[in-house]
Amino acid sequence: MSRLEHLRHKPPQSLERPRELVLALPQLRSNVNLSRIVRAAGCCGVPRIYTCGKPKIDREVARDAVDTVEIIAHRSLPPVLKNLKAEGYALVGLEQTTHSQSLYEFAFPRRTALVLGHERQGLTDDVLALLDAAVEIPVYGQPFAHNVATAAAMALYEYCRQFPNG
Amino acid sequence: MSRLEHLRHKPPQSLERPRELVLALPQLRSNVNLSRIVRAAGCCGVPRIYTCGKPKIDREVARDAVDTVEIIAHRSLPPVLKNLKAEGYALVGLEQTTHSQSLYEFAFPRRTALVLGHERQGLTDDVLALLDAAVEIPVYGQPFAHNVATAAAMALYEYCRQFPNG
Image (cartoon, rainbow over all chains, first blue to last red; front, side, top):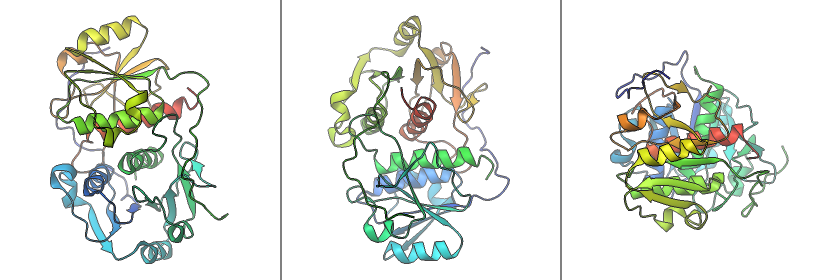
């Protein structure tokens, strides 16, 4: 193989059209988890994250994504999801449920709101009732469930793999 | 869609054969990043992680993966990588380099040692020189590079997607 040299400041890949992916999540227990999600979303070109409560983003964790990803906080998630649905977003929950499809096989609609659950409670019944689909990440060993920010990273990756140019 | 119900203790997917994926990484700056990687590796059925220094795994972060993923620490990474290569592992670095292939397109050998870099330095030249291949995750926005544990999660996911049964 040709000699590999580390590229320190490689420019990002450009999108042919803006990402139509947004994230929606309840108030998480951990602002670090939220901040990690913001960084990953920024790297993926996601323009907006809808959340609840009074989110505090840790700039040390989220880095420059704090300046590029819009964070919109509401009091609760269901009205946000209803608005997103009215704007044509498919509501896709990331959760182990009775009818989840494998993330390996799920074809994301381009216009998707990826709905994430709370670290402990996951997606609540009022949110599950609004979803168009649920996807889950196959797990093979302990602790049998991914951290929410880790799971979000995997789903963000899969969406971008399916829409590499936006 | 059928009514979705959250499954709280879904059993993991069983592997038809043990995972032949291992991770190899230098001593990271952050034991939290390492612990997050251990949890994700546990969920993916990865049996072993090779690292350097005196790793401290935070059980709050890694959860039960601390009991299932073997952590092997050496003084430096190159001898570990040479041993893995002698055992038939392809050494695949996760790094933006002059010759990295996109993770979207890279076909992992089943027997792979995924080599991760330090948060600041990335993969060092002595490690890059030993690799069989380098892969990178396309990024589309700020901060133009994923956190090491986030990137590891995406690469673990992609490997498992290619080898869903081990």
